[in-house]
Image (cartoon, rainbow, N blue to C red):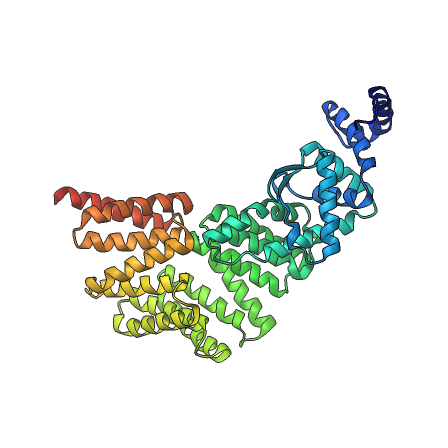
Length: 445
């Protein structure tokens, strides 16, 4: 305030100290923050109502960089109001600009804005508005985020997390499962299962507490958590959740529903992973027929069902039954999803494994290579699925005694698995065993 004399300013600050002391004490501010509270109060009085409301809204953000893209607001008047609010907050140093469209609130200023918000009659409205804004961002998270998605979404994750952690009561029942599932997808899609797990566990707990045990979102939360347990090799934990989800879906939705088909497929995968092939085959077949009835022959879910059944036939060495199903699934996926899709990489990998298992190594190698490159492009270099692809190609090289090509692939695959899945995960143990055998064999040749 260049036009205010130092004497006048000190008088005002002293007056604010007296006014703010009970507020500061009630909110447990440290003694070092007294001065901040007094100066903040003088700055607060200089803000118009719009800037005050905007500052209070920002106080709901996490203590992290805040991405603010005003140009995306379609309403011109609202855009102008937000621009003015940001300019006012910046002018009084209540908000910091780190870079273009990236801002930050000082922790003490954030606390003082939050105190103003909590004392106002607009607190619930602001919290509901902020929760809704973050939910809309969360909805943009795909189940399998690619590197570009991860880059774009990362700045928003702390603020979505803030809503999930502290403001979930302001999220409507119909969106509760979405908020937590999308957060989990962000981490799960990168192979960061330990970071994804708490969100899926909280989702189960919150949906049960808020929606009751007989609600379809409870079944979905069971299924999502079970999917993570399956990915991390915890089949004993996944199975009861999937059985509960299947029964609940049948009871609430009837036998002829796509969610029932999904549950059948997931449960079959657990049976397959634990060596109960006859039970798995029956459920895979039921799921395939149900998908065909519900969505028709030309659908990605039908391709996935064909692929699942074929993989089971490969495990049980019924290669002549598996091959036409794998070829059909690959063609269907390319036609429906395009060449650049992770499901296409899965199909290429599975078909390559079949060729390798039946002695057609020259046909298997280019498919393994193509699957690996596609996985890297879509998932990044550090995803467990990329590690599995590396392991498969390395195993082919090892069989052909091309150890110089096999060793670096095994080594990279093992590092990725240990970092993302853990040292005792079944997949990590398989890759480690393959790498050790490769090193031993290479020493003799």
